[in-house]
Image (tube, rainbow, N blue to C red):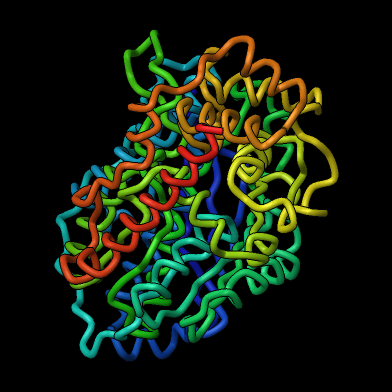
Length: 465
């Protein structure tokens, strides 16, 4: 029997989009709410056709999480006339890369995603160029150390900017998430306006996997980063932003393992990679907003430069949060473990005082995460964490600062210290590894280079003790 994924037309209210989709008899929904986007005004300003395209892309990239239920075909229903060859190429490329981890976890090397249940439509020429672009970029703020450093980078380079943050129901109550984001955005010295977006979803936290064993899957996945781009397009159109600023570092470009069954690189962070960034920017410019720049200002650097730069952020570090399990910190997941060991390596003790309840290096549940980070297991953690050399450097520095614990003992016994060359590589700035405009790169890259030099000097001074 063919398993069919289906999509209904999104319902658009003045401030929200309601989406519905499913697989056979299973039905799920997602709601987008916006604080300062009026869809009635957008329809008048840009026309019904472009607004329909914007809603379609938001719905399509939310619906793709249902491919985790292993459908055979996907029927875009009322959006069939928008499923063009460029769209289908993008949608399937995102699927192939983001769902690589899911296929690995579910041992599905021969599943290549759902086939299209209908013919492709001709590509429509709907993209607009925004007149009178907003001079300030819009900076995505997720709440972690990357967001803080991206804001600091814009501050030091003299950019005025606005910030943008969204809550997602899978991470807990929306009010608490936005409260955490507000705490961090207040540290943006030149930040002017904070724009909010709410996502309410009933799929990712559903019991569908445990209740429907006949589906043959054990985990669910969503393409959060691509979805967040299309979710932000209404904000771009409503306020005329010409630049969306991300805070994705260079480490996201590398995979967790090479899957022997298929020979492909499995990368949990592919959606944050420069490959994805270039692909998404090119598509959005061709199909939606012709003069929009979508770029990560941290892409030229690795995590050690970011963590070292936190040394100059003072108590603002206390307002960061990175956990995807229980915000701000569950202290038992790989993301908490990775950020914690790097904070031990780079951040002053008085800043960290009281931030965490326990020594995570001694917590039994975290030992697997630390071994994975250090390359002692089959793959690195399936989370937004750095590569093995970055974790090794964090352990070396934290140990030099006096950290003790089971994980530190594992590092000392089973891993050698990094070579001076490896340390130098981690503080190298790839000045052409980004999608920034030439003008933006000319202002930001020199700041990154200064931060990298300061971070390397701190590191070498600590290791030479």
